[in-house]
Length: 241
Ligand code: GLP
Image (cartoon, rainbow, N blue to C red):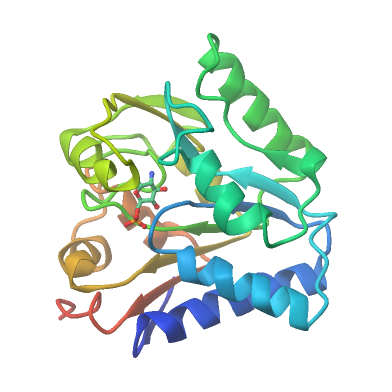
């Protein structure tokens, strides 16, 4: 694991976007597993700008959506699918046939997980995973207590996630379960970028990077990955010893 501290959110996002661009230039059919959420929003805007300026083509890439709220429609503004359409697909030329998102309305979520696992496997694994970190240390919807050995699965969301998650929705929304790519996928990804910015993430970043490695805090798994970069701004680094 490599730790890089940037002076601010913009510089961090520039660097993260640059990492994605560099990979896709080198490997035009890369398998990318990307998070939604507030953290990578600017990364995706800058990625779109760089892709346009440098004529980088994403049409051969595979796009894997990291996670989704179970029972929430892709038309709902708070869904991860809506986020990806708004912040990624409307600006970057991914091929529709190469985009894989969990269908969180499916009556057979186990099948959704199996399909996602199969897509990742048949395409040779994930080349780059770009993730954020939740206020409880989750990655995707791998909540505290999740085994590092799991591939895609359905989870019971914990209280922090269901209350913090309200920020994505226009109105109060009942959130109980999530469907997510697993931590085993993260460990097997060829490269992982973990992004965090702002004072509010300082405590969880300190625990993830300097505390005990335990499944009670999923983000600390990043230290077990040999090709991961933790990219944080000075505010998020504020509690590191
Ligand atoms: C959310 C999502 C994650 C996201 C994380 C941090 O609940 N499930 O994929 O990375 O929590 O979100 P944010 O970047 O908005 O702080």
